[in-house]
Amino acid sequence: MNNINISNNRKCVTDEHGTVYELDLKLGEGGQGKVYSVKNGRYAIKVLQQANQSQREGLRRQIRSVQRLTQLDLKGLNIARPIALLKEPRLGYVMELLTGMEPLSNLIPTPLQFREIDNLVEWYLQGGGLGRRLKLLAKCAEIFSKLHAKGLVYGDPSPNNIFISSSNNSEEVWLIDSDNLRSEDSAIASRLRTTPYAAPEIELGISGANTLTDAHAFAVIAFKTLSFVHPLMGDLVENGEPEIINQAVQGKLPWVDAPNDDRNRSSFGFPRDMVLSPRLQRLCAKTFGEGLTNPSVRPSVNQWVETLHSAADYILHCQDCESPFYATNKLCPWCDAPRSSFVQLAISQWEPQYGAMSPILQAIALQVNQPRELTRRITRGWVEYQQDQACISLEAKQEATGILITVQSLDGQSYWLTSDGREKLEVEFGERPKRFPIDPQRFGSWFLHFGALDRPHRVAKFNLVKGGVS
Image (cartoon, rainbow, N blue to C red; front, side, top):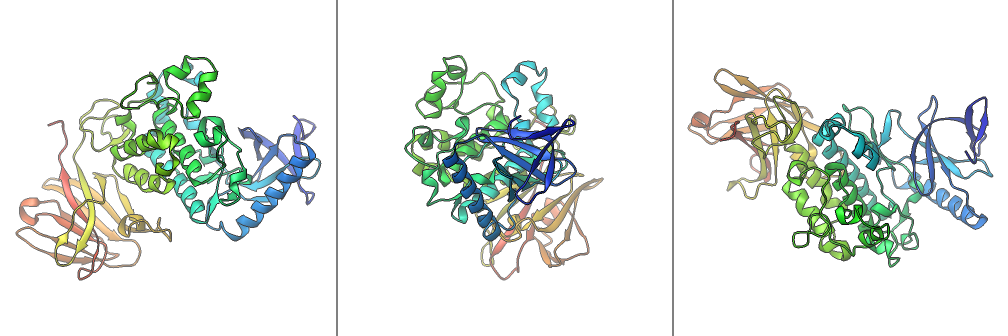
């Protein structure tokens, strides 16, 4: 292994300050080099490939530039920051990284795994299933969106440089390879790419990295993570000559789900209705249809953020196989068991003079015995500041008389419940839990208000959705 000292079966590198790091596992590998975890530490090492003197100096300048950027502009973003260069003549750097992380690519089967895995459904679910994938992708999109809002471009998104919690009980997301970072006005010169994910304009050499090339790469990652198929590589590409791959990534072939051209359909992957919400399907169609060769109409990463969150918010867990699936399905698509009853929270805008207004901004599925928290993202809409702060807890219980909802404030604020039935109520609640029944005949619809009743605000309307297949 080049650039690494090996003694007594220990693989070590030294940084510019003289600190020695013992390498542990290879976490990922790309066109630039390899990434290793460090034994007994919250660090990772990126060892870059050999380069000529001019390239080496350019890379070192870029890493120094990224160090300055991360110190000034990226506080609060989950990006593994370079903290030290490797000692010359080695080329690479040390970066911070949480322990217990793995590349997102571990959730996507390789071609060899596709052939060897006996049960792809079971393999999909072992990675946390649909719900966890949606949450991880939403958090990843948030990082890219915040980078773009600061005028920065990541440059080379791929599943190998997006790191996620290795535990299914956590949804932590970090970006590594921060040496790719550039300000958008300087990124035009950079055409560094991972070919299956790079935008056609980069592959054709007519553009450098920008926010819309990042958006294309992220869309490919999302589609592949959810459906297990590359959106541009259907059977025509998989069964064709190697040269046809270039045509696909350059946008010269239809994407796998093109509505009016089935030349490049794919026999692989999960049915889209199982893994993509209607809004996600529309984003994919826009990205890989008209947006494939016309970046100006390509959806931004910011559009993916809320769409992925909304999809994750409308997930139920099957009462039989416990697999996550979209609440729009009356049967669990994984085992065909009937969907259980649940409570839908329809989020809309409330106007004091008119009440709840159309349209519904988003819908949340509240399942019996599955507590959930409403964050500022839901109660206030998309906000960058403390958007993950929990505001309200909700729990539904099945009682003899019907479903009973318990609500409680988690942020010290007071909230209001109102009903519009025979018994019209206005109930304030705070840190002490408040319970109310879903009883349309008596109370009509219940509304959970996220603001003062005399001012415009967001509101959640509780709707009981019956289970079964009828």
